[in-house]
Length: 66
Image (cartoon, rainbow, N blue to C red; front, side):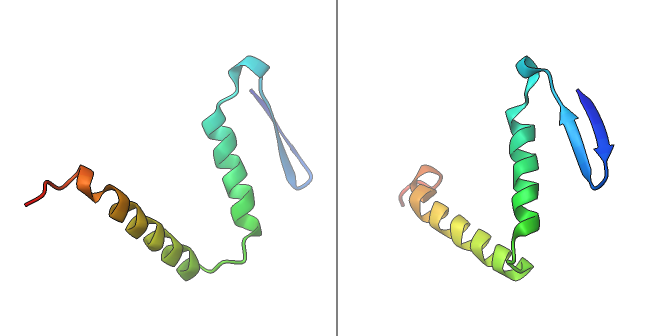
């Protein structure tokens, strides 16, 4: 991997057969997050809602019926 800082950008260069998909996802998430106008509370509320819905759907996998 090579990296270059040019003006206000960082340019990363990878060999085609050595691309880490998790790294690409992380960098994409950071870029999207920087453009977001959501407040920290908005993000926490959304996170709690997602966890609440996930728990409703998956609770039976973790807790035995009484």
